Length: 278
Length: 211
Image (cartoon, rainbow over all chains, first blue to last red; front, top):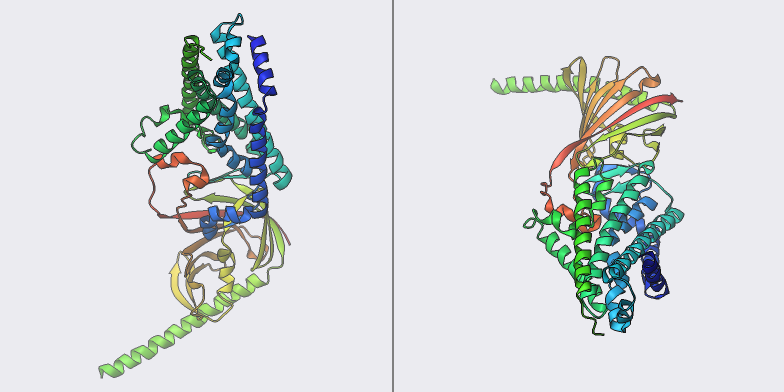
């Protein structure tokens, strides 16, 4: 199994598209932080203009913590696209180029091959999230320094700068888990099709579709929302509440693990019975 | 006959009113003079905020006072402070001419209502509760556009009769941030509050004064 994972890792490292994700994060984070550096005060004052009517705000609002928090929101749409570029290509890409037939001739079980590809996809997802965390905080720290974090979520929460590190750690862990769900989904779709575009477009279409349906139709679907995986993508925000709702977060972890399990089991099941015709 | 009686009564009331106003005004001016005699100083401050939609722990820092119009705060981290109007209006209220009316007593405090003569003044009216030691125990300021502010003071014998604690209450409008801006897409599922106005309070404790 480890040998298979090593082979898959080697393939990922050799593929130029692997680096598109890192380059895109570098550009997105760089562009946003530069924009905040030059226009940040104005942008933030739009968000807090109501507060400024009632209070005199003392202290630095724009800092590395705020920018990391803002950029962590990019996991809703941007990061899934970058993840799908690699994970969606894992099986469908090989089917399209004809190398899947060669791999399956090797003395490994199909489920082992699928699992190796899935684990490699998860490792890629984790590395992308670590890069996002390092890049947002590192560049933010260089440009703006640190400071208290102001979270504009259901009111205003101010978290002291010495109280944010563990919150960000768990928030990134929660975000990474959500991204692994996305990676599993695109891997599953990848096992159904024979071209790499399908899983990428398919996964993103599902994400955007579910986001729109369950955001706009939230009052109607209120009861099933906790069981839809897209509603857990923003659960990391709960780590920035004063009183953290542990039950909701535990539930979120369980639901997401169940989704990872279901997507991978369906993917393995389909991969095992798949006719390789290309 | 009724007409003469009315004129007499009216003149008497004017006389009484002016007398009360002049005493009250003198007391207010004395108080302002006392405040202006306070030399520049710095002190430690502990700031606690109690507003429905704001969650923030106690903030500590330093306050640097140079004049009633020039007060600086050096707070560790981020803090919500009362609007400048609150700190300086009480003194700016007395800069131009004003009317002071004695409104009687409440719990041993004399109540004085102050109305600025300038029609364009931001403060419409102010009411002060002053104790026998000429210390302001409470004041309420009604402004044209920012609602009303109430401040209650406590003293513990600091030099120049500076307060050791001020509790300020004011009207705050519930803040609603666009979900797309905050990234809180789940907010759509929550019951939306009315655009209500609630009372917010900021309590500041002053200690270690250094003149």
